[in-house]
Image 1 (cartoon, rainbow, N blue to C red):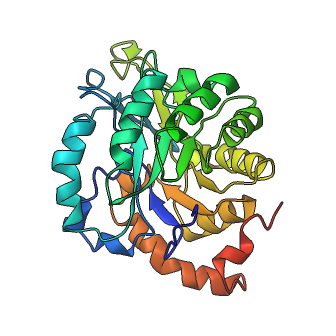
Image 2: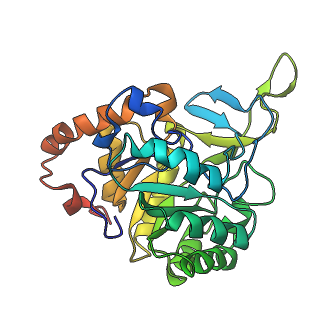
Length: 295
């Protein structure tokens, strides 16, 4: 992935795997290809008010709001704990509220030896005044990409979401120097409590994720992979080894698994163990050979 070897293509998605060491209490997380750690911003964030999670058929809605301790605390406290249990390059997920925010946070994380990739999130629908506002405009997404590339040496993967013209934004990021594209993020949704007659979550709306969005995510991965010459990471409703294969056939080099982990904390372990069986069933000798096979 962007020049860094992966033992397998399965990557826990940011926001569903903490900083990794929490899950190391359950199993050896070194079986993962890598993982994308919790979205990190320049300054600490408390996040949105509670309640901020709502279950729904085919998935869940969340409006956590990028709760995190800030980049300085991540470097000083979280990465040293992770280093004790994870011995591969990790993907650092970064969010911001200005171009300068993105550049500052990425520049700091770029200096950390354990960070292999920077996943720059311009697609978060759960915060006001940042994230998604950059991901809906090709010029703004490209500006963030150029600013981050100017202060970093490691691969920069820009995370996009479910905008109408996803291809033009992906192309703009690629032209601005992005080393990869990841997509999609959650889709904006909401639930209403029938007894209270009010929205379930305090933020009113939040990001809808889970198996219900898989066909949308697959379509966007297919479109973007066919339009850019840089690696694509696919995600959105993935919950099985078959889903991983399908994403790779659409054009994904690697596949992130998110909401499924909140249902079954061992889901990535199960997917990785099941991949050889599914590969044999569909006569696949090498996963790298099938990337974009349906294009």
